[in-house]
Amino acid sequence: MPIKGSSEGYVFFNKQRKKWNAQYKEYDAKTDISKPRTKSFKTEEEARKYLATVMYQKENPLYIKHHGIPICEAMKANLKLKLDTNQISPTQFGRVTKTIEKIEKTPFGNKNIDEITSNEIQLYLNSQTHLSNSSIKKLYQQFNQAFRIAINKGYLMQNPMINVICPRSEKEDKIVRALTVDEQQAFTEYLLSKDVSHCKYKNIYLIQMYMGLRVSEALALSMYDIDLKHKKMNINKTLTTDEIGGVIMGKKTKTYAGKRILPIPDFLYPYIVEQMNVANNQTNNEEKLLFKPLNQKYTKRENVNSELKRILEKYFNITDISTHSLRHTFGTRCIESGMAPVVVQKLMGHKDIGVTLNTYTSVFDKFKNHEIEKHYFCRVYGIPTKKHAILNDYLFKDTKKSMVYICSSHKKGYQNISTEYFVLSSNKSENTSILEVILHTGRTHQIRAHLAYIGYPIIGDGKYGHNDINKKFKCKTQNLCSYKMKFKFIHPSQHLEYLNGKEFEKTNVQF
Image 1 (tube, rainbow, N blue to C red):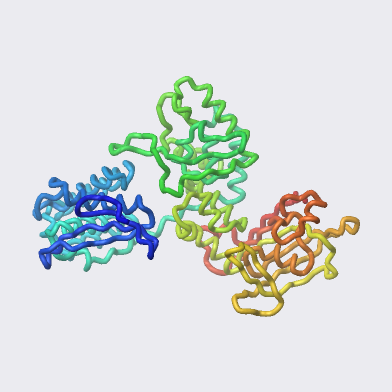
Image 2 (spheres, rainbow, N blue to C red):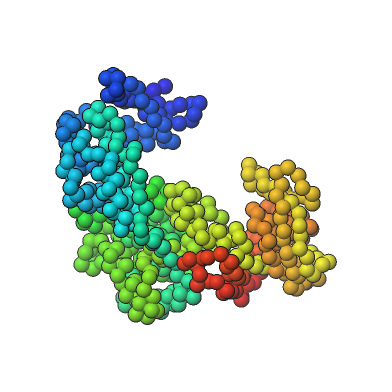
């Protein structure tokens, strides 16, 4: 059943398509009549926001008075609408306002919206290729939105942006690099050697590097967001800016996916406690902020970033790292460890998996092309007769059961797998062996399922192992870990080039 809206628009759920629809009437300048229009959304909230926008445009007489409105006035009206209907944050409002101010300085900045031609816009955008691709795209979007509003009002019959191509920037895309493993270790050791009174942003940097928080998320943390008993951290808001650039506490995260609960790493736990003690001892900390400056209400992200740059340049001769690079370092380490992209997405708070894949595409490509070689240690039940073997079989993934199945001959839906192992040591009294495993294909649960298939299940594996064996050895977690990585790049690796030819190994693995 339709949900009540206005007389001209309403929201309803389409059972067949399983989508929420916003339906309204739109004036058609060609036929001079109003026709029903429907747009689909995943959630009811999205549909209602869209309908509110359309109704605002129709019902607010001050929004666009006549076809002679200057284009930048239309842009500003649209932007104010988005702010009033909570479609953008105050921070975004400030940034887009600056974009519109740039357009105002152009020859047609105050030109009436119905007088501007496609050619004028194209020539202007072509002259802006010294800007970044994102900046050019923002300019393009502002023009497009202004014209779409005019068409919706019946003041224009055709959007001139149809014939406008968004040009590519002449600048190279900015690459946010992560700290190398050695750089991260050295910087971590530096931070841990400092008291919080001598390095006031120490724990912000640690949280970013080892939990992947945005700097705005870290600065918004309060003591109410920390669950010391369960070692959890609740990410539910960000520190942002208002329309005039002042620092304020936001009511939500950057995206809906940014709201998440993260486990606090064991080694980081005492430094979280340290920061909470600092916050507790502050007399002017009504909001119980974890990171509260002495003489200001909120910590400015610019100050955190500039101090990071100062430390890295002075003590480590590093000049191309920002606070966002620390978050990127966490994500890169996750991917390098073999963590599934969907898990990385949840930890990072990305709105969809595409963001994760695009951000770390170079790392994924290296794994896919076998230019990153991972070696594993595992403890299995049984002693293989062959001290070394390359296993070649076929694997089927059952997504509904979250299980994989292996057979020796090819069947429909099965993919080939190749797993190599070396027996490093054996314990006859326990009937166990320590294996080194190298993957030649990367399939879901490949090591666990393949070793179980040949009769040597990993101890502690609750899915492909044996419960009685796991109980015997009192293992609740699988005895499997990645202990070595080799980087052997064949193709250009851009910001990963520093890793080419290097090898990293964990030496104190114990089961």
